[in-house]
Amino acid sequence: MDNASFPSWADVASELVAVAAGRASADTVIRGGNLVNVQSREVLANTSVAFKKGRIAYVGANASHCIGEETTVVEADGRYLIPGLCDAHMHIESGMLTPAEFAAAVIPHGTTSMFTDPHEIANVLGLEGVRMMHDEAMQQPINIFTQMPSCAPSAPGLETTGFEISADDVKTAMSWPGIIGLGEMMNFPGVINGDPQMLAEMAATMNAGKTVGGHYASPDRGIPFHAYVAGGAADDHEGTCELDAIARVRQGMRSMLRLGSAWYDVESQITAITKKGLDPRNFVLCTDDCHSGTLINDGHMDRVVRHAIDCGCDPLIAIQMATINTATHFGLERDLGSIAPGRRADLIITSDLKQLPIECVYSRGVKVAENGVLVVDCPHHAWPQHARETVHLGMTLEIEDFALAAPANSTSVNVRVIGVVENQAPTRSLTATLPVDDGVIEIANDVAHIGLVERHRSTGQVTNGFVSGFGYTGKMAMASSVAHDSHHIIVVGTDRACMASAVNRLGEVGGGITVWQDGKELALVELPIAGLMSDRPAKEVAADADAMVAAMQSCGCTLNNAYMQHSLLALVVIPELRISDLGLVDVGKFEFTDVIC
Image 1 (cartoon, rainbow, N blue to C red):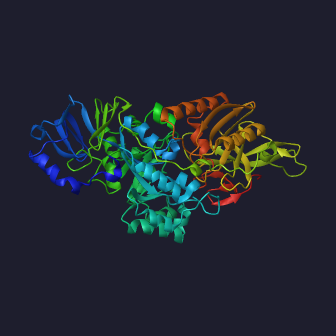
Image 2: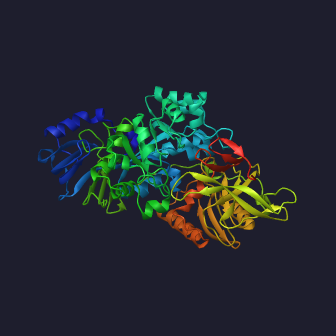
Image 3: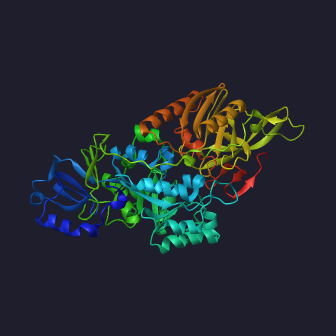
């Protein structure tokens, strides 16, 4: 049963009451389990749970009165029963997968609810793209709620997108059945300065009784932060230290602690709970961005919960932060996030609360995975052809397109360099002295070329700059049509010929990621849908992604999940220095700056 047709509590209330009272039989009874009660934060031994019509009818020590001839009885044998896990903030597109294939990848890991912000596809295909993501999400056997993207472009005037999202678009989307709120409000300077469009988007969301997602990517916790909170953002996932987490919850926000493929922000913030003793119910776990390799090889929200426990968090608190806390934040605590009467029958059976092996997963009362194997179908949307034809270069790129000219008669120049920070989204604004050869600035040491190629309107525009931190050696290049958030083609390399070849290759295949070395392609991940996603099975995409990671390593890169760092180099709403199709951006000042100092 898909989410659109799933009955509300009111629709089946009489049947739930009848089962709980013993007048009718349950569809399924799981008995003899140790119930993790996230409402009271305790473990209740020898507990049984009865399902009816995809919802929980009864939770108690003895469910024999709920069992009839047609009831399926499952023996928990003393294992733990925990609520299905919820990802409070994430982007499906970052998995390189469509909603159907993303769901298929994470269900065996115990994820039964996701709160997704499809602002990646919004930048490429606009409101139509958001609707397609929403519609495929609504078909899935787990709960995928959609937040209407708020910022496309993320920073007006500093980048060019394929489409723009308006306040009217937000108002329209609020009537769609799967829309849970407004996606992360990345234009925090706009909110702070009272931008009418940003305030109108948030007003439309609040008038619809829904949640405004936050994104305050600034270390300034003074007056600007307070002004941003006053604008209505209900949560934030951009904190990187304990003081960030504390500041957010003290202002009435939910502090979202993320562990993605490259973002490791749980350990540095969870001390607000483990050491400072703050109320954990205002803290929520999320992934933000996980690529397919992470999902297949390491896990999803189960990975995040394990990590929180490894960081010293009480297992019951960690589970609360991935279940009831999330449901409460979005106003859904009466519908999901706990094992209690009336809630959706989303449940995991596990034998260990610390290692958290996901042995059996139920979603809406149906077994959806067992021992790591998906046992249900995840339906696909019929993606139209124009959604697969979104890379428009307008020209064949040449070596000269990635050459940055030096001032006349100079033998060396001082330049600004984007400094990559491992496992964090922010970059550093660095400087370097680089040599000049025949009027062109060349690279040296750990500094590499970076180029941003416009791909939405066939303008042929190329912005050039420099980046450090990847550790690349030899002659190589890596290009991607995933370049948050405007998603032009971003290419990093040590050789301009390889850079041109890599970008042209993505033009041929319609988008994806490619790694080149010594004039040859080492790896290719094809992402034909909007240049962001594949509708192939997750394991196939993950295999290509693993090959891509191996190719990056063969080119000298040793960073953890460097692909995620690569894809965010154009995200002009996270400090300190970024590149866009319009130029090099000083994010601290929200203005363009020159490459040459």
